[in-house]
Length: 249
Image (tube, rainbow, N blue to C red; front, top):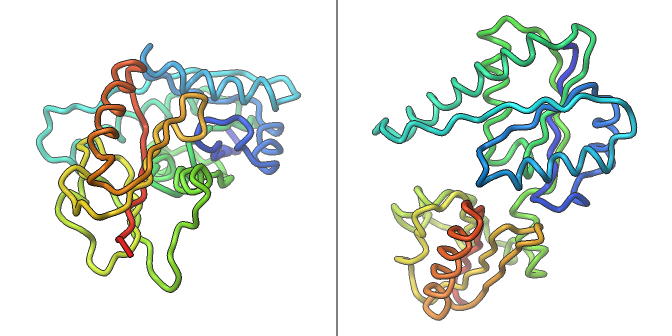
């Protein structure tokens, strides 16, 4: 493979992809689509829809399975690193089969540079598998942007910082000096134990047809968020949510 485009596709709305992303797709000979089981088939379907809508040349769609993380590994960081190694092996096997002059593409949810490990995994592939291909990164709309757009609000308040973190980190306490905090990857519902006077802007499946939005004083809406989150996860088999917390004024 000669070149690999890593294309940010936004958060589930096919119209999120940029003109630069569409241009990259139309230089592509093969698009690699991850499959994560029947429950998450919707994510693969959206990637396929993007290809169908925007690619006007002949190309090959290559599906590959993503193995689940081994939850038996106690250390979180090691668990993730082991998982990345498995994905890197899948990448290496696929890329090795590609023609030497072919261009490939990976379609990354959101933006490849924000809370996504694709670029980190690709660096390992090039190092360990002795594959020499160019990587071109195309930015995409992040879940953070989609969240603030959905509520029609700015990300920051005047003169104050914004912290982007995970639910795992937030569970350890409110970030020092933070005024506005964006929380991603919060499977543990860390907001449930925070200051009741915080204002929360919560979204699930933001940008998708299934989009869910709730905002308000945390004490007033956190139970509603948790119930809706649980029911949505049960209905769809998966959930991707994000929220912004802001100190009360």
